[in-house]
Length: 158
Ligand code: 4NP
Image (cartoon, protein in one colour):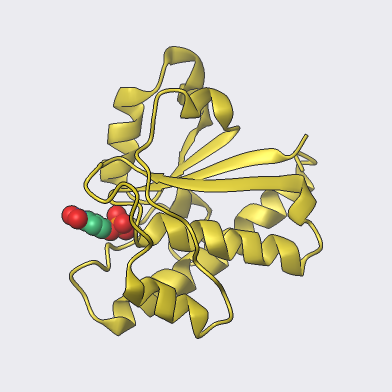
């Protein structure tokens, strides 16, 4: 059974689709794609059904990474459908904690707890920013995604 990972931000059009696509790309590069199922969702519902933000798709495409997800809102049964749920920032971690059934709370983590350069920080929301902010998100999710892939494969979860 693949290990099932869910990345969650607010709108599910910038940060979590990037984390999803970058992690998929890293797993493919490492020949480990069959060991994982990845998805993303938003705690907010404003963008449900939308493609990822065009600026994020462009920034990722420049790195050879396709961001193809459509936005959806996180749901209580995600705590059954996934093994690990990663919040992109502390606000979304709080929102997920409020939604988690008691048996699912242990699946929740702040994504950047795994960031080797700045553990415990938020992935900054690039929505109102410029191109450099989208690039910064990609830098963060790439190095944190590498650390996550290393952790999950070392633990033989995957
Ligand atoms: P995301 O960015 O949470 O990284 O997808 C945002 C996208 C949209 C909004 C906020 C954040 N919004 O308010 O519409």
